[in-house]
Length: 230
Ligand code: AMP
Image 1 (spheres, rainbow, N blue to C red):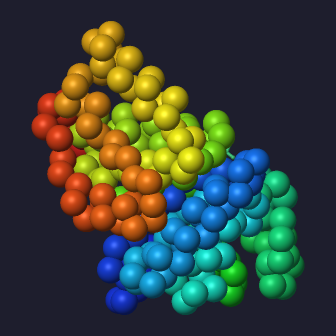
Image 2: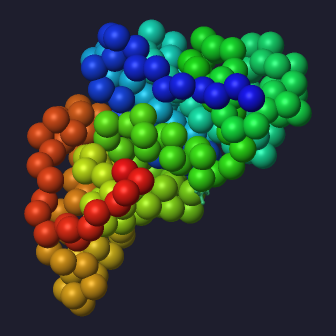
């Protein structure tokens, strides 16, 4: 078994986990936002950890960061390769087939100019655990069910005191207005406390995303639970 270790490169100042769509959506602003964020991360020497795909705006943010000399680490379950890692893998395919047949756990694959380091994992849980461990902060760009699930998991884990890393929504063209309204309604209905309503911070540009991460203050009022495994 080959186990991928998470190596923090010396020149990477912070690592941001970006959740976003495996599709492009129907608005050019989404892909532009992903591209700008990827480039800005590279420029500021902040690393990117993401789902490891080449499709949709997930691929865009990774390519923008990796091709501008940024640090990128993609973590992808083997079952999703055929669906989410469909474009140029720079000779990776043979290696992939070999790894899929032989690996047990998490397997680092050869680096790619477009997508940086890729780690192949067995399942979604391993992917999410590894992304969460490597990240210093979480950012959601527009996306679908997968994006929402990943975002809400890190929010609920924050609420439960399992981690205390900044969570930022990049609200491109009002894409997340409905979710923000849902949170306000849940506060009004007393399902979410006002304090926990502050877990997610909103940004309207890539610069604001990075600024919100740097300025993030942990809201008090989280559940005071102890987790042996964290
Ligand atoms: P989507 O927003 O649906 O395009 O999905 C974005 C990313 O979330 C893709 O990489 C999906 O593989 C991933 N995803 C989908 N469902 C889940 C899940 N239950 N847990 C974690 N990631 C998921």
